[in-house]
Image (cartoon, rainbow, N blue to C red):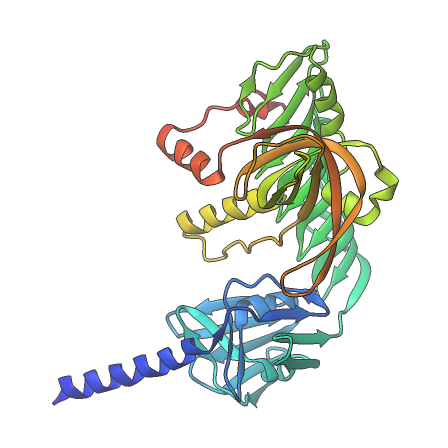
Length: 424
């Protein structure tokens, strides 16, 4: 009899889960303060309820989300407040100090579906004063809330930070100085180095370039204390495409794996390549393409759309952030780190070529070109997009990230970074 009851309960549970999954809206968009949130999990919608993924949504609102699988409970931290949210319950505890707490009743219970926590969109305002709405026409869940932003100096045991805070996180411009003599000055997001910034070591070495979630990642210049200079790209704290100009005048070229290549310095491509590596970044072009017209620049990424015209010319839409997304996906697949890394948003680039380019959709391509005025196009769902654009001078296809990962897992990688690591 007990076995039959168990089977019945299991069947009912599967029916409930199936019904919830049946109204997953794979085209729904989440907006927080008018910014699109790249969610790892889909929004769930039926006639009466809109469920949003807890971690994606609340982290976009500057909260810290932790899940305790032993008690099946979510703990949400926001500045000086802790929210205790048990799964399968609509009653949560809000604690603002050691002696001050209150019980709050939600309209819908917290759910756990396929290892993802969900809560009702309309219950968000019971955590923070906010305005949450669902548009069935545009399939958009939008949340707006007040951002607490202030500039201050905070002293730590190991140094000090002076800059902007947003809802308790370092956010925007700021400078962190360590007692060791190291320092970082630049952009921050959720207390991580993110965007453009300069890191200076006490030894005199310096990194000037882009950061993603505390990692050196993107266009950059690295200068060693002995006068050697690297100009090119970093991928997850490691040198990638670029060149090292030695203090004695000699040049070493690196491929996308950070390995030395036999590039001839006296070719026209090599000369243009040096200029392109020093060219404007994607974010710089997004802000002011017209201020960089005809400058040499360089991008790599995955072809999203390829069009060949009758005169032999080509037009491409390329995602310059595809490599980052693929590496992050590989990290999430093989890592046991519970604090998974979120995907970055796509960075679309329009590419024009007067001559045929042997590339098709889903190819990974490096483009060396000059800056054009921004390009505007309409997406299949009717949105108007304006993106940076370049004219191709040279191009090169390279391995997909998945193929490179296979090589790394199979053979390992010995790269030139090892020769310079101790000079930092």
